[in-house]
Image (tube, rainbow, N blue to C red; front, top):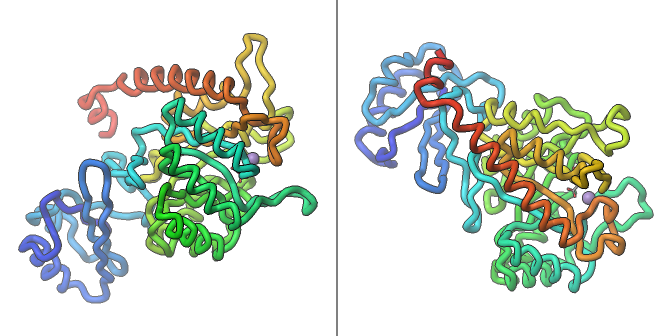
Length: 376
Ligand code: PEP
Ligand code: MN
């Protein structure tokens, strides 16, 4: 059971003390206070775990300081929305807002290669007004003979260059627990010129020890990529592993699922699951059209399949896009065949804006009154 508290109810307030006193009547309850800090307000919740069947919902709902009582299904206890009318607050990280209303584009190469290319990438992003990037220092590769990333040694110059071009957050995959430590140390040594969102790649989508490791630190948010062969339920349970360790700053990323039926695309695009994740959870939802499509093939009208896939996700309300680009894709050390050139990235950003405008129009179809009627 979750008690969502009214905005002015702080720790030590009379209202909170009364609620605690009342809860003492129910032995065996594990009571935890959780704070979620969004852009405009902090939401405080009391989480009750254990024998809650005797706890009277009506009495608690009527207590001063309680905004709403939500009976939690055991599924997705931490990340679940539980109640369609509950408005998730999202989170802020390094000046960037992540929630189910916004939209951020994270663009960049698959892997960090040379300082020149990384600097050019950041500079292109700055010119486009983008403050969020993607690039891996640790790369899981299908063949052991392929480039596996520069590892920790590139982090100092990558972070310094990011700061130079006002990049606020870089999505960066981690493969082992020690990589989290290496990133945190490198950020601190560089004086935190930028921020990092720790990426759990599809290949580690059920690496429970790694999930617990990113979940048990709260300095860096987590971008969880759906397992390529996992159901939504299995992937959401993996996110619950992260959240149950303490870190609830999670973005859920759809990146296509593996099946030969997707040919000629690399994966089957699953972006219609954007609204599914949004109604089941409080998590902002990202889409990755680059790894879903896996090529730069175009329709006769000139639009790349990558653009059309992204448009599907954006028009359905996606909150973040992960897209690969490179100053000279043919020279990239990883996934150059699906990386956009700077000019293509510019066109991509314009195309996303068109889809986003269409989404905003669609999202305003229903008035508050109509929504209330539909939820009855
Ligand atoms: C990536 O985004 O760099 C990546 C490897 O993606 P995925 O884990 O979805 O294959
Ligand atoms: Mn890639």
